[in-house]
Length: 631
Image (cartoon, rainbow, N blue to C red; front, side, top):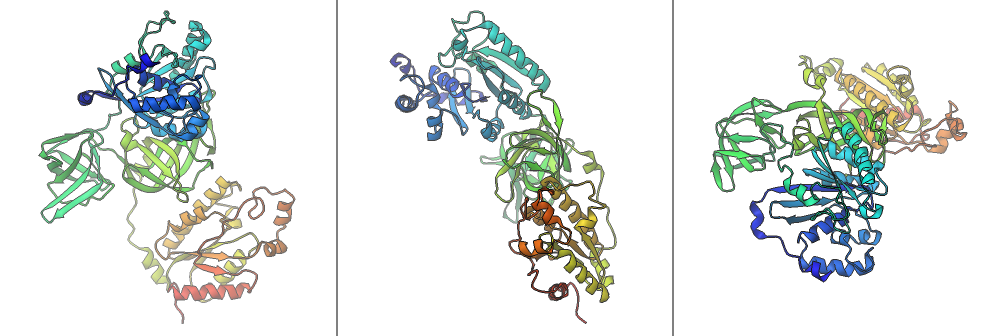
């Protein structure tokens, strides 16, 4: 051990001009990823002396090598990782060889930490996919291979590890190699190199193995040194998302950002998207001053020959090679939340500096990890890989992920928890999103409302079944109609006989039920009507999504707050009795939750006043809001 330790040295500071390769280690738990990288760093002299000394001490407590240096501890930095002998977080390590510098992302193998593996893969050029020679291909091997391919990594090394535990058997190596070749062919992975290794013993890492003379290929390090360094996705033309509008004085206006693909020169014709306004580059300003050209990776401020309206999140690109502008697109996603994905629920979509509200309008299929076939489904569970259609509330500037990671990779963020719900890779824009344009209408909503003698709005009644929503809504419409106001009721039961007759009562169907009704009620408000919506609508997230479809003051949430025992005592339709008997699954208030509004616009104490008295309270509020006008 001391003889090996004498080889340890810090990286050569003069290596800054060497090309950089970013690589990922992945595979199932206990396949030896951390050990392989730790041994690779150690044998190549990439471990600082203080790190080595700390790893030696930790090996005595947490090591699995009977007192010898446990190479995995050179990477497993969290106490929980050391105690369990697993990788949880992504560990990054840096070292160099005479030919190249390396940035290594060691990612976890446990299925519950798949989100961390996706994070590690997002910027890598090469993947080291490990397989335990004893166990062969696993579901996690297939999952990681699929994610590696989706994330645009074109070169994969299949490292068949722990060959010492199968007596360096060539037949076993060839069996695993052939099995993975079938997987890679089905997934469409561009290049696969299979290498038999023993990470613990250092066989075929930095030196060729004397125990496996039947293998005549490169070692892991040789392959890392020789693989094409320019494998990163770069199929798109010039793209620069605007991060900041620079206006230091009245004489200068510039647009700052980092170039994510292509190059730009002074005098180039450019277009700002999504507005599609055109101009020319008059100046390119960097930290060191003005220059004639800039390339991918450069942080610059662009000045244009004409003043056009550009804001943060817009994209400046080559006029003759434009990305797509769409509010609907198809994407591969890796679902990360423990809660399943429900189509129709609204999330925050983050694509670089672009941000929008989005929902999954259709789940097409998910990947069957055993067969790698597409399986039709209506929901995605945690760690599922699927293909979905995404709709956003405004146009986004996008490229297919295979052309540009920066312009095609996005996240969906849960609005309630701020948790990353999924990582997505755009496949293509849905052409209906590009070929259908909003038609300008001469008569406005305000004009339609004015001729009716009142303002339009949406009164959204929510509450338990039996709370009195429909009764109060009916009384309210009758009173409004008697006074000459134009109204329409959308009742939950009535709508399910027509527009939503294809929907059931699962969480996913409830979400879609509310989405459709909110779109219809928005159209009715635009027509100038006082629209009364009476739905249980049990989820806060869906009621909030409905509100966001309307302008300020157009959506009025009415909470009919009737205690469950009163609702159940009424039970005019016998639904509670059936639900208690287990005959109605997913019944709100019994077997499915109701999330009461935190701050409704109108709070009605159901059961304490008559429907007409409650309707009077709403009319008073509508008068105070100047929706209707008192005689």
